[in-house]
Length: 416
Image (spheres, rainbow, N blue to C red):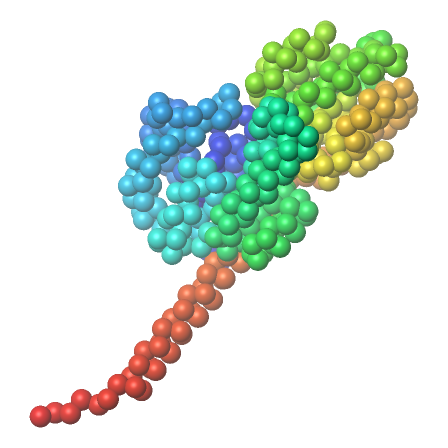
């Protein structure tokens, strides 16, 4: 049986975030296995089409009218000017399934062409956009009296979730990085959902030679976007509490974002490494004793898996996807915000415990494989294609029934 022809529309590809990281690995998987694959994505360079073997790439330039969503991510309200070019490539490629990753301008195109060209649609949930929407209005809610701020936040989150669910309900099959999100998607859309977790390069991310800290000062790492939805405001509080408890720490911050200046002001002694990739990122993990990842909104947490592969235990919150990666007490800790400092101190004060966690973290990460992740995605494509085929047959049968019914009620023609 031939593999399905997949047209993939990621809402992020070149940027520094989990969606882009997964998308780059997905393209690599398709190229490695010589699968017929068309990746339609946005970029900053001129619009161009490339083909290498079975892999086709259509990169579309964003316009000067693009609105910045993050330091390296934008939304282009003029992106519809690319409609004809996208349609032409889709008709040339003849996909069996179209896959989108979110309600961006690329996602809207994917949903539109899947509908108009009658191609089964797959959709993966990577970002809790409803929580992001509420977090971005924190400044406004703080200005509201009484309980109005909290009520407004809940209203915004519920409304954003409702819109997102209607959008994802267009798909024949859904993907999400953890079972909780899959259950939510299935319950709200009625569409089957499969797990689409993340993999890690265990040859790139490896433990450091020294297996324990020999300095008086421990290094706590954070890797990710420095933004309000990542809850990075908790990091200074953690440092203050640990210092008061007599645990000497400093932070190594990898990433960039709107909260960077505030963190530079409130994290004395911290090292800000900026955005790192490849070997530079892998080397940064080897400097850390623990990864501190306080996000409540991440659906998976690529950086947590990278840390574990590097032999670095992680401390994460009780909300979001990272808590499904970390094994509490074995490869790190899962704690409420107010208990982060206590959980970190308990690990750092016990060298034997830290060493055991480091070894267990590496062992756990060795069980993750990008090929296994995307093999399961392709299994889901078969489900979407079969579902679309059944729907098409039912529609044809319904139309035939209407035609037969009309014929039965049509009086015979009498020749004159």
